[in-house]
Length: 313
Ligand SMILES: Cc1cc2nc3c(=O)[nH]c(=O)nc-3n(C[C@H](O)[C@H](O)[C@H](O)COP(=O)(O)OP(=O)(O)OC[C@H]3O[C@@H](n4cnc5c(N)ncnc54)[C@H](O)[C@@H]3O)c2cc1C
Image (tube, rainbow, N blue to C red; front, side, top):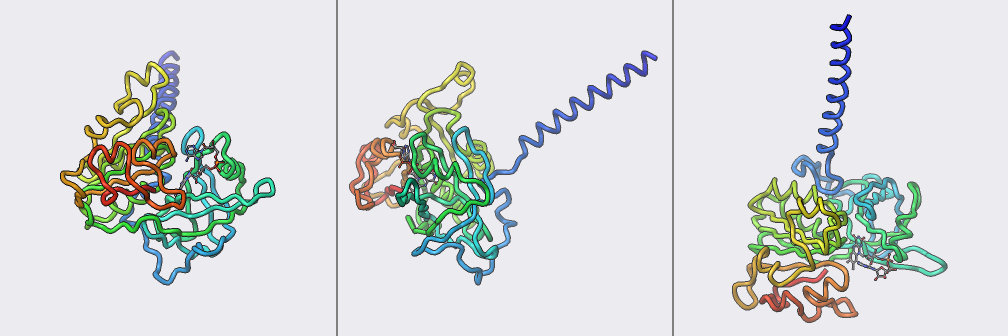
């Protein structure tokens, strides 16, 4: 009798433990939402595929999926009208959203994180700003709603092997154009460019796509290095486990983790910067009001970068 009860208990325990282990494995093996898990297997869309977007006119696209990325950031998938259509985007490009909000046309740029040949849809990683007009509007959309999108709008014409080193410095959602660049470089085995990413966020919980970025750094150890800094650590347990830096980006932090120009106008490397206005001011200075690159200022100028080897998104 007691032997049978013991067996039952054992089976129950084994089921619970087995279930928990299974759930853990499932959770830790969940595929990346943003980066291609197996880029080589991706079927290339036929060259004749129509364009999903129009760079000159807004097209209404249907919101088909919403996924959580962090506590305040979601991935939005929009379907093209023609399921055979592709994004046909040149790295790096953005798109423009338009919506009539409270009787006014609001227009904002957003960067797709989908590979250029993906058929039928495109994806965006979008943060919900508490006071944000367009970001709140998009976060309130429901599956099946339509949004006017125009593009792609080319921002930087990336060419493989043009530089030995690419330095990417991103703040918050400024990671999205960097996603395009990282994929374009790493998924092309003929491109020998090395990437160093420094990614700054307000807190550990605000870091977007950290698991995916860390996995890529493990998969491509000779081609991709990834460093993080957060303004502050919010609790004691984070203080024990956090391996990145803390505080705003500083000159010393940059000296420690990124390759620096070895001479004036060094053409072997390019630094690309993207982030909120305060971040841009600290690193590189912002673009001009008419969206030109403008003068390079800030920490990057101090460290020897010039307008020739710096790009502001
Ligand atoms: C080329 C380009 C590509 C972009 N791609 C993306 C993207 O892929 N995903 C994404 O989420 N955003 C992206 N942005 C930012 C986006 O265009 C909007 O600026 C952002 O969503 C806020 O717009 P909003 O209308 O909600 O806020 P607004 O109504 O314009 O501003 C409301 C408040 O939010 C603050 N705020 C606005 N923008 C930012 C910001 N970027 N960082 C910190 N505070 C801010 C302002 O200080 C203001 O107080 C991109 C911007 C550019 C220039």
